[in-house]
Length: 286
Image 1 (tube, rainbow, N blue to C red):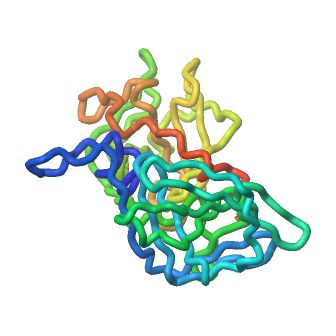
Image 2 (image 1 turned 135 degrees about the horizontal axis):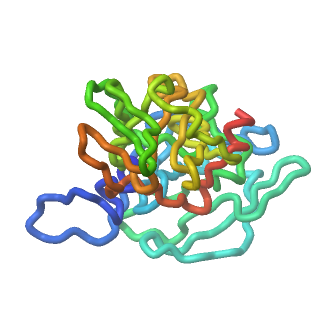
């Protein structure tokens, strides 16, 4: 997902490589100006509002927004005295965030001993995503993590034949599936419900949330747990997959033009970092 996540070019599991005569460092960090107005709200109060946010892409993590101190309500930051060490960026000072009658520990951090090559992060503060009430771009709330400008989704119609089987049972057969290409992920194939034997799909409790596609529902097929999923009310940007169903190629047999598909690098979703957890409650409160 984007530059540093899943199998992006700066991630540990990148499927491509840079064409350079010398090997690159194992870890590459990338920082750039976001070029969007971004705001953070805590206890129903705006505590940060900036058009000068720096976005840090770090291997294995979603991008993190760093606000300049002058664009933050300094009274909302309370030094905790806690200092940790970042392997690339040095000492990290932690803050509680406090407004009104509410306070949250370890809700923000700042690099205080940056190496010379990373001084553009000097005097900038990042906020733990789930510690805040919400983040906004202009007047629209953004969910899950700071927007990654390198993340892209393309959806294409196709006339290829897709068939899904569980043993001798044909679960789905479609001559017009839809394929979704998403940065850092292998292609995902979605099938219209009219081409599915829906008696084979058994809805299960529990949803997940994608900040680019919306809430995801899951289905068991026979004794196979969570073998299929669907974004029943997909975001407008990806509404072409709305209420279509996709199938896990490592749990049921999925054939494309007669060739069985297997789990590819980039299909297994990597758990996200602790400070940018994505959950269903977040989107339901949107």
